[in-house]
Length: 190
Image (cartoon, rainbow, N blue to C red):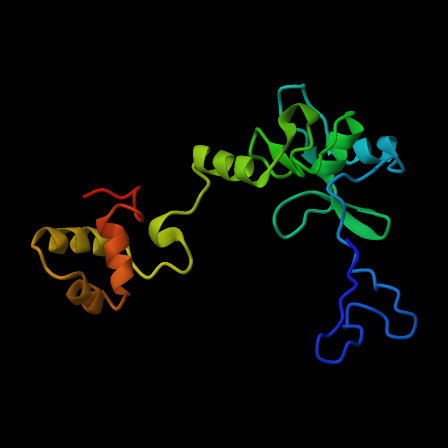
């Protein structure tokens, strides 16, 4: 997309253009959804993998990042090993499915039989299906515990106002309303 914008007050080029030659400045490069890993040496890559049977996880034996994924330095930048593995198996991501998903839910696994291209929604659905999604008080910013939510539901049955319940638990009235309507804390029942 070309950005040829001018400031309407001054009719001067905006900061999206170079004022000297009026050529548009290129935005910072975003990594492509489809990466070409053809220059990766497959022999060196697979030497860092503990290969087992095709059904088992093949765990990456090299560097592991803070999120638990295997990483390999390629073109002076770290790239996830499972993404490279998918490419080396003859498959790749696409703009529609830019992520690499694990059917085994093992972040260190690079077995191409356990990997597939996917989108963010598929990744979220997998997380919920595998019960890897934090819920309730396990969420770091949660202000309520399961016991408090049980108490709130009991108070709601006594027809106390949502605002008085919210004041009692130091939360917003909307929080009580969402619990009341079943929009939050769905997993927790009395």
